[in-house]
Image (cartoon, rainbow, N blue to C red):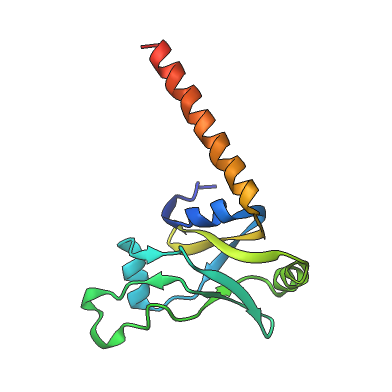
Length: 154
């Protein structure tokens, strides 16, 4: 079987800073033609986006896909609500999990998997301020250790 190529388009780094990612899921996303062209150019922002479940369907809100320059009248609203494609059983499971205290659905990254655009969706729990500080301290300590090793083996 041939290996499918995967290429990352956009990442939501703020989500990993603000939330603990408990589980991640791969979903398809419903886009129109000019949006796909704009996505291929990498003109996507996931920073303040979130997902919700409405009438048994999964939607992403706040994801900004810039209008395609040559799209004229066919361009859609850049901030419109976009439907995510998952099995009904998975959506119902996510609905039950998000009813729990502090759980939310956040887009983590948008990528190509072969010819299809996929969205990595994270089931997340919010971090407190002290958790964020611990992560920053841990990241700085790792950076210093890497820098010391690099200097030592020069």
